[in-house]
Image (tube, rainbow, N blue to C red; front, side):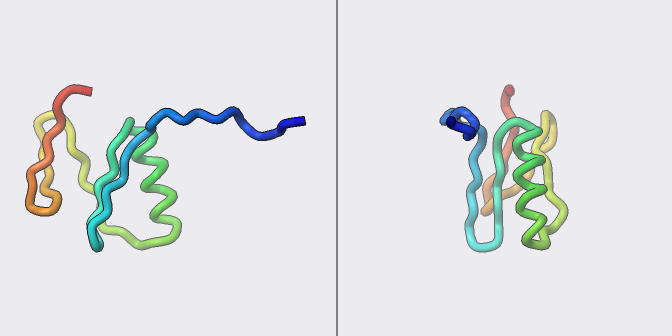
Length: 68
């Protein structure tokens, strides 16, 4: 009997790490859960959220949200 959950190979989000900077993208709940798991092991600064009308800098680049 197979007790493992069915595999879902679809992309849920992306994590970009450069030295001590991290960018997490995906649906809000995926980003929140991922950040929650990371913070179980490492202390992080307060995350910045990119939303409509709000931008953020990452590695010297301005990140803006366009659409969903």
